Image 1: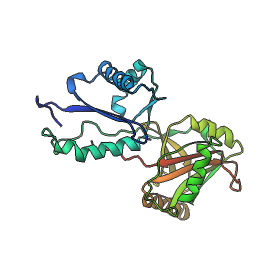
Image 2: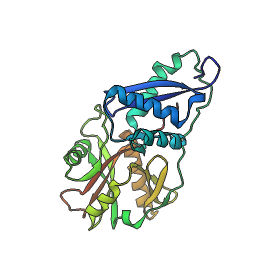
Image 3: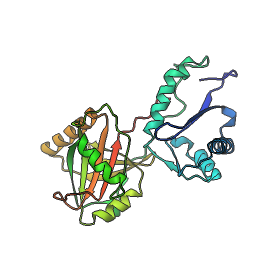
Length: 270
């Protein structure tokens, strides 16, 4: 979108995970700096009379400005791909607000793309002893999520589409290690995004933060394992990108030490 000067406009969107609170504010391009952003954020905080524990954001190109502004108002910034509520709101605003604006130009390219770094070797502290492609019905995922919500195990959750039936098959990666509790604790320190299969490299890729990727595990590129990896990705696609990571002592363990609900990140085109 462009303003009356013909210059591209920027927008600040702030919401909580349930969108019970949301704030939208346009800025001209000559006010895009950390000082103006911190002023806007502080104004929102003052109006709400509440201070969040942290601000998640996914615009990696704006990381310096956003980080400075968040630090200025005393709220820790967290680069993250776990911003599904925000990206869905952004796509909704595209249809309901942006395309109806007189300055909207659908032919112009987005001001920002989504950039990721090449996968790096995984630190030994984050590596398990073995792993497996697994799957659970959605009801089973919800049961594991209850353990995370009750703070009985390490992990992190996402809102699950209520339209998904409880028998929907959700794929996951199970990591087995005798030091499961320690590994789950270390993993909790990462902002997990999602896991994908690189069939060419025979590697599981773990996305963290807003742009980091790791070579999480490898598998032998036999016909059987390659077929299993493809099927795992197919099941994930059928579940709308929903998947999970489980960390436990062994295959027979009755409970996990860590459980993360993950979602393939699809950056908004806006």
